[in-house]
Length: 102
Image 1 (cartoon, helix red, strand yellow):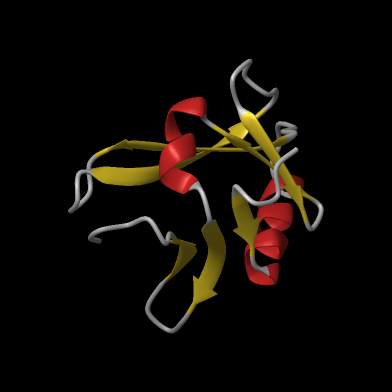
Image 2 (cartoon, rainbow, N blue to C red):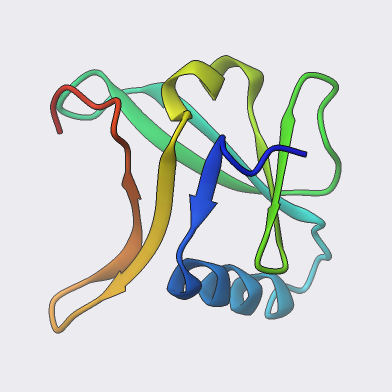
């Protein structure tokens, strides 16, 4: 278990818990990864996960389990996952100290 790889704010943890309990199909956690796309060439991906993949890193924090894709590890070190709601939008935000552009 790694708690320094990624962290979650209270808002993110509560939103993940809500999403997990409102699903028809059970999931044990969220798989976090990166894919090509977005303005700077990389975008975050999130999917419900049943099981840990063999090379995933597991982060357990505030009652939430994240499975971090092994290909994303070096890009996500130190990232804080937050959930933000305002009048115009709501969603998960990744505050990543390693980002060079957004």
